Length: 470
Ligand code: GDG
Image (cartoon, rainbow, N blue to C red; front, side, top):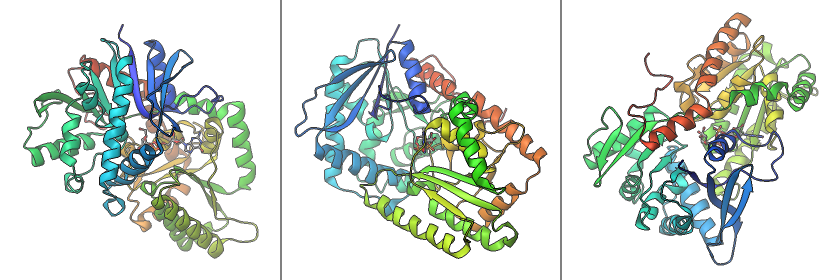
């Protein structure tokens, strides 16, 4: 049986993770790795003065975890630089925030080479290699240069940008050429596949993919396809009623004091549309005097990449808007916007999701967005809440029974909030049942298995998408 090797920037499995704190993606990949006695390789998150390539090996629940330290310059140029200041903003349509620096480019190439050189001796002849995300796009090219002939797949967790934006990246062609060293390139959505194919056709004159998703360019044929990522619904449906979930649910219920809760849960990131969401909520409060003191918005925004200036700027702006809203509408015993930067365990989060009448998920751009699915899975089937979802989240393609909004249009969002708060139980149930059926079917196991099958070359057909016509 062939072994699976997963490679990602960070390894999100750790030996000291307590129950309820392992993320869904980590659990999903760990299950596949356990079955094949596989290995997960990535950066340790630590730095060392000079790169040694020394691998720290650990066994975690039947999975071999292999980690390497990087140099401080690597972290600056590869991680904070090319990954988070160049590719992340560009791939989320924020060319105004995109930094193009040659040192970032060099650092990105160097770390990908170092990953390849370190990983090379660990790859057996029949292993399947599955590389994750924009940090490691050129890794297959580096591995091929070292003689690796195995099947290698790449999954992009974030959107693929429109050609007109991608061509602003110096070296865009080199990046795309490197992707042709994979056997399979997976995107979150059919839109991602078409954006990629559109770049190939218009920029490079490469013919569109055939019915199996096969594309030929730079002397190689690769398969491209959409593999929308899901969650393990039971983690949330059962998590919400577990002792910790139940406790956080009750705590929230007690603090509602008869009010309805609107909830946002996001990493503090400019792609998540937090500022626009706050402004839309302010608009809603301004238009609906009857709702004052009847509702509140709880926004959990866990800090992320806070050494990067754009994130510090956003944090300061959010502090200011939150303060303005509470100053304008708040009373001595009502805080209209509860804004917190701390994180919660997954089972506690499930209880909080369940206590919210409205889930407000309004990114400006998002590969998929798992929070939308987690919110649905956590609901009480007898009295479910309403999901408001941005049309710019990949999840919108699968979740048509949410209230779909344009996050740039604050009046549209304010109307959706009002509609969600006043939606009759019967309609809430009807919408929720359809959403939940999709979340349960298109789950993490389905995502992982369809990708791995396609990587093995077994699937001759493009995987079914929930938004495909029947
Ligand atoms: C990238 C893509 C794509 C948040 N706060 C807490 C917490 N979270 C968890 C959520 C959810 C995860 O973080 C966030 O996932 P998203 O999918 O919403 O967004 P990104 O982090 O941007 O992820 C995205 C994803 O990759 C997977 O492919 O969907 O489009 O950008 O799971 O629950 N978890 C806990 N406490 C918190 O306070 N335990």
